[in-house]
Length: 89
Image 1 (cartoon, helix red, strand yellow):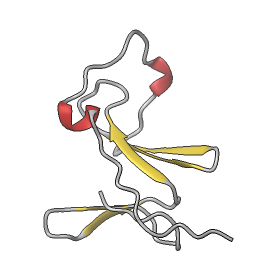
Image 2 (cartoon, helix red, strand yellow):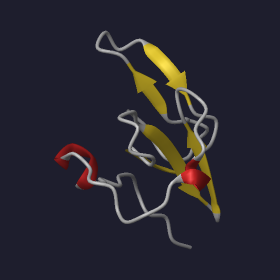
Image 3 (cartoon, helix red, strand yellow):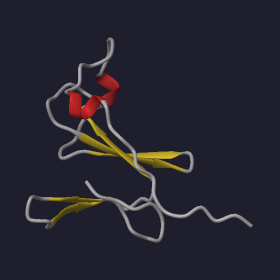
């Protein structure tokens, strides 16, 4: 998953050959996780008071109940490296 916030560059998922597999038409922060315990991951793009959920197949997160889902380490400890310049007036 690669993205740059702003500038009309949308988050994109690439395969091992750096070919675009999917592009998500919303600017914002990006996380990925398994929201349902199905063994497949979903992508969440969020910002500006809005979040959009993307999945490789239809899912119903409303049916999920119970406590927290165990997540593999690579999904439970993401790291955010915000870059770029801060402009002040």
